[in-house]
Length: 230
Image 1 (cartoon, one colour):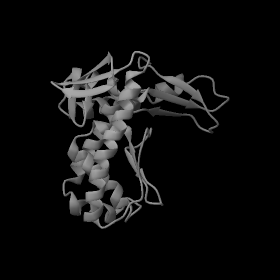
Image 2 (image 1 turned 90 degrees about the horizontal axis):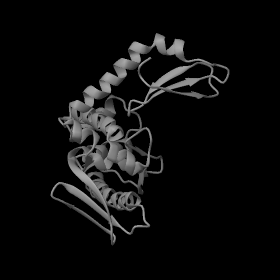
Image 3 (image 1 turned 135 degrees about the vertical axis):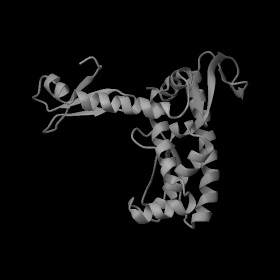
Image 4 (image 1 turned 180 degrees about the vertical axis):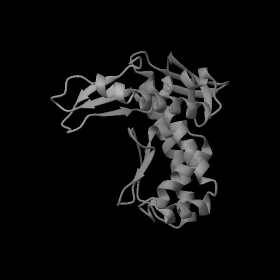
């Protein structure tokens, strides 16, 4: 297979293939299995289709190759990310995010901490306004580095959002908050759940598709992978 892949042996009965959001191909094998080649050959078409679908969905965002790969997409806009030695400072202007930190401090860690608080502030504003509109109450709001989802809500009413959500434009961020608040009324994504979503965002289907596109972008974008520490 021309497509690179990696293998993990786990305590599973049957082998399987996973294509990650960053197009990393993972082959999971039972402890006693030795070679993945037959499995890969059998499912080669499926793997290639999944990878092509990811590329196609990212391209639908209308970004050029440099923006997709190299520029920091922050709150829906593309920036050059610049790290400099100096006093603690972060500025966003003229198409650049400039991060300054002392030489003995990791500038990306400094930026990640700042970004976590910026995202928390924005999501808190949305959550407070929308909770009142939807007539629900949430408990606490957390920013986490979740691996498989944009956000989640707990049975205690706590909202958890992925740090990568800072890649999203304002309207999608707001929709993400609405999605989780509606879960406080309906835990399952059934017809009633989507009916409630549609009451506030009639174009919810388009917004949900856009969230998938940005999910793939957030895992392909090099600056974001550096920020997360991948």
